[in-house]
Length: 343
Image 1 (tube, one colour):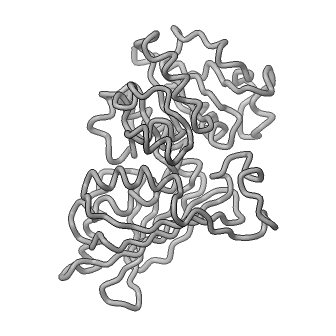
Image 2 (cartoon, one colour):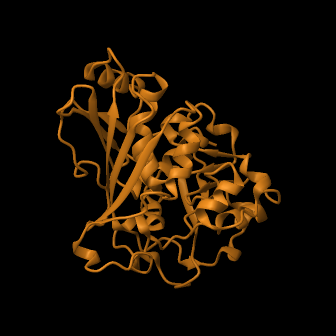
Image 3 (cartoon, helix red, strand yellow):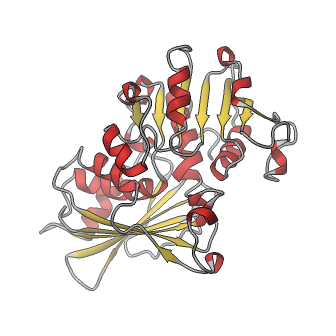
């Protein structure tokens, strides 16, 4: 069995995230890509969409052409509202089959909140509790118990990795957290020009959704598992670059807590994690080091006010924020080395 390769199908293989997923999995030593699925460009070779990809990879096919008895894992890199229908159709028919969903369909445990934020009725409500929302570093111990893994959003990944240990260790005040995140436009998908009809899109910066951005729902849900007292403001921005996220998180430390203690707490929490890099305090931070990697860099900095700090958290939205974390979750699900195919 040691030479066995997982047989993989990908739904949504030609999107920005899908192509990064194909790129990573095509180099993974324990993986065999069997089906690369989409609804258009059927029969074409995947390398025409991305020069990084091998010409020998499977041609693009329809999802209904997949022989599910021969597939171990399905990655779903689809628009919100599509994955829950597909998983509902397959989950009970093929008990061996596992799923990693990169959309929001299984992120929100309350189907009414899902409908509120995503304007879609959830058609697999009975499967929501059978799924696991998994930021890989936070769910390692339980991930093998689930067949459906919900990959988190890119903004929430950068934010939760920075804040989770500090909330858990009760080092910061919870009633006044401000989060300012900036993302490359690939986070909006290939139809970004339809979603954001701004002038000079390719050369300007835009703030949007200050009240009800969709990712607030999953951050509310996950933070309240630690403390129901947390209150935060989140405002995202699109910037004129293709990939990368930089989150600036403004927090007030509790009385008697120093910046050294906060940096130490982060380093200790992630001491056994290969992809989380806690930088020296007051280190300036951008996305340059993390692009095209599964890394998250975190820097804690002083501000002009003694009790107020800013935490910078940088990831590649298409890798650690999506495809890379999905591969990391797969490695954990199947008990491979966590870094396999990612380092």
